[in-house]
Length: 95
Image (cartoon, rainbow, N blue to C red; front, top):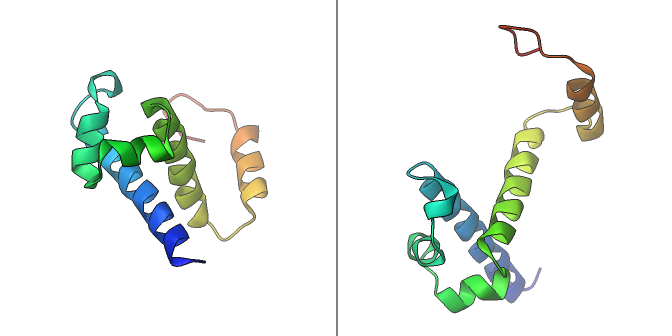
């Protein structure tokens, strides 16, 4: 991986983390691009280099969180998802 690619992806990860940290403090509709940039330590222009809207950042962050969650399991990702989808939630129980 080239140095510039690594920096690009690292910046995107910083913005993902900034969004998640801000979501712990307030609802999504009250989070601004300015706040995300300040928290991530990037300029507004950098945000718009990566994303058109906050929704794009949200989608990427959700995808990355899901990937990290699934990486904790040693079994095949598709097998794990199929098992979760096949279970019905019961009252008071997760599975």
